[in-house]
Image: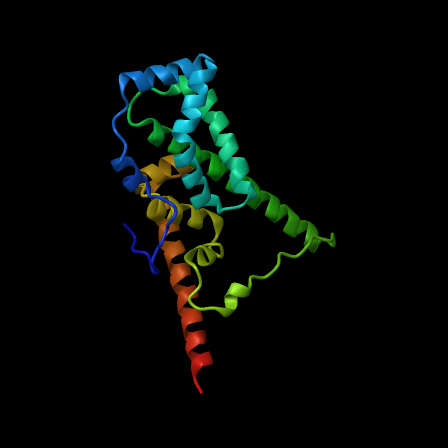
Length: 213
């Protein structure tokens, strides 16, 4: 596992390993409830949403941040959970199954946002007026929260770091969820960590210079 250059204080986001350790194995009754939810029984569908909404929101907020986009992605995930209930085979906890759906939904959402941002930047270069993103005043404070550093890392690298370090997925699991090779995941982790180290080092040196009389 690649070592993080700065402390990954992920609270209130629970890592996958920590969350799964507290979950009991799926019972026959639970599996039957999921089957009933897949059949369209409203009581079972409500039960399933209540069961997975916490883990789903934690994953989405970890990958997308705590804003309107995350709320939209969480709603899409819950819909996908209900639609995909018939695919649940009872292998592993219901929460772990829903968490994987949440990861895929968040990654699709993030890729879509990156494509839209690229298109907007291209339009801006062609002369169209695109509102500038406000600069964060947090740049004046060192050290900054880890999520602010991560926001400056290229999207695919940020996704890999979050999945691996924040949510506890292994490299093979990250590769499967991201639909890329394991070598690509390892490269993204190396490049992401290098980018974080460089940024933290730059700001640490800058802070030291500012503090000199």
